[in-house]
Image (tube, rainbow, N blue to C red; front, side, top):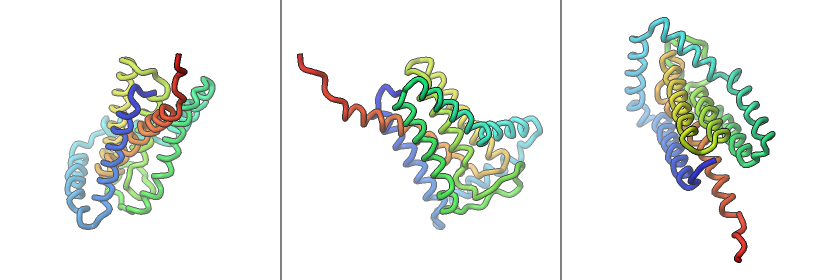
Amino acid sequence: MLVDARRGLAVSGSLLAAAAVLATLVAVPATRPAVQVVDDAVWRWAGGVQNEPATAVAEALAVLGSAYVNWPLRIAALLLIAWRRHWLRLAAFALAVVTSELFIGPVKDAVDRPRPPGALIETTAASFPSGHAIAGAVTALGLVLVLASPGPSRWRWEVRAVVFGAAMALSRVYLRAHWLSDTVAGALLGAGLALGFPALLMAVRERTRPPPPVR
């Protein structure tokens, strides 16, 4: 899946650490106002640029990032990987998906952040982190890592996955369903998990693989 498992672990660790730092800044009362200043400014900007075409695009991205689209894609990918008997890739993607889903509810409950006012779509549960951003990053980046072979072609798909994840995150801010920091933390967490499990399993395989026979 990865050319360099150690590099993958380093990048994944950096993404997850950044998500943890942002979560701490939002959760701690002493630092939350500093984050909220930025979030409020972006919230006001999103309201100022609101228009019908942009709203339609953002709503379409909300549907693409919903469970109704994400789960069928994930299940289809898992079945395809199993059919190909790529067990390490299957385990990596499954672990990333399951772990990301397990994170969302407890973190939302722990931070218990109210949603922004004036949402353009219906929302449920607390605001931090963005479940759409987490799911979009895990699915888009995870699918590229486990389905595409390393090389220039996969690199192009990785760029597309990152662009999609960023667009998904920004669409949630535009729709006022989340604060900016909710979506940034969600995207960091999702990308970190999607990259981390392939890197971790590959590193374990490399360590446990028996040495080649001496000739």
